[in-house]
Length: 259
Image (cartoon, rainbow, N blue to C red):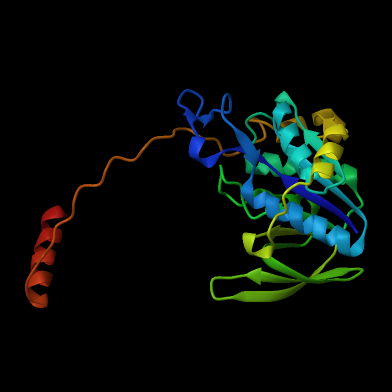
């Protein structure tokens, strides 16, 4: 079984700061970690490899320092790593990002599964995973809490819902986004860390994955951050006391005054 894991390096949540001039995250001088939700995707890929064999590849898009996250993923047990880093990728929104990653995955074809965390802790959109599956035209299942069974051409999974979970059979190749209920990520072993330190990380630019220049970066991003600001504090509300009928009359009069 060949599995691809998509991860993102993000600032530690407690240290997220915004550049007021560019409306982008300030990454300089801020400790970066693997997106916490992605660690569950890494762990699940390792477990599937231990059960079925095959190869695991971790891929990330980001600045050169994102290589640290890829090596940490390999220390946890993944086999190979690809870093998508190019100034042309700067400013990419979720649509452009998912397109870029899908171009790289097409270069890694064939594969059986793509695993992603349910969302990134810095953006919280949960759009990149589904976007990748759309660009690749493969099935997707989001919020997966358990992979029950994997066959030659399908996977049987449990998808978490607000009321409980659904059991779905999905044709392979497919993309799954996973939630933290799926497993408990392991701590990298010393042997794993030493192997990851020596491992080669492939670095691909836009031309290496044949990405259309009009679909990446700011030019390929239909959504852009125009302004970031802190909402003004809300004014205190008004409390009415008395009988219900009296309260209703007072509320109606108040609403009339505001029309």
